[in-house]
Image 1 (tube, rainbow, N blue to C red):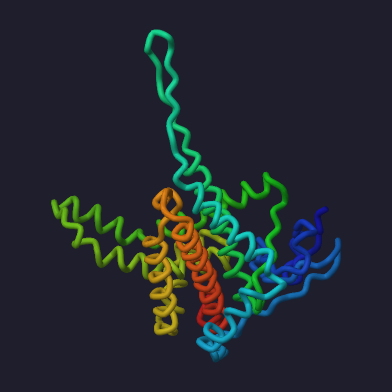
Image 2: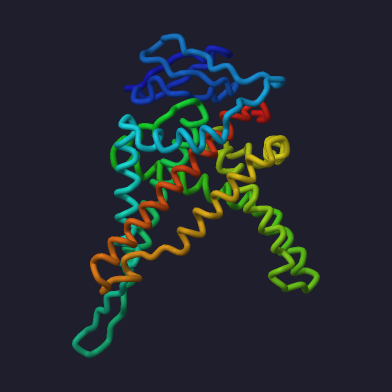
Length: 307
């Protein structure tokens, strides 16, 4: 069922599925943020943006260190947490399952078929995780103190969410790395092939990536990624807090890089396998924490965001 109503600011006709009733959304015409009403033609409640001269909300680190565990392990969001941990465990056991099947005739001729089960599983698992990550950032930014409810809308709906999430994260990464890509091309024209020549630009891109992810998760408009003034305003005015986010994400990424999947340790004792699985699941809790921290950054410093 679809809920149809008018934007409370410009009157534009908006339509959302009824499963999204009570959630925040943005008008496609005027960008007004509102609460989706429960039925057709009901009045949508405006969500007032912060005033430009409003001071930042205090207590950022307290919200990070004191409230995060209770938000992640809150019973209202337990279904989302279980989903994240289950797909992470599935990735642990399936990512290595790429193999080839050889088909040969009686005369010895034949061919091989590569079956990338692990790649396919990783694609849909990471896409689902990216979708949940974006929902966590968005809900945390708007004062939700538990993991958001995830709505699959059937198998087809999940596929669309996976494709959209992967696309958004890839675009965010590419836009962040545009300076590095441009520098690599320029250095190539001058015959400079050293990797260290573009290292500074790669570091800059990785530094900007959390802001890009935050933008696509909350703003939900990929064109906003090309407004670099949106990036540097909040970073400049809350540099220490943003640097904390960058460092935290780097630590999570490094731990993820160090982790083993089942294919790396199969044949080892069961205790070793389960210790590695526990490590992978613990990293996922840290990843959820990182997404929550990004949402908290917007919540506490919303007055620095032009959008």
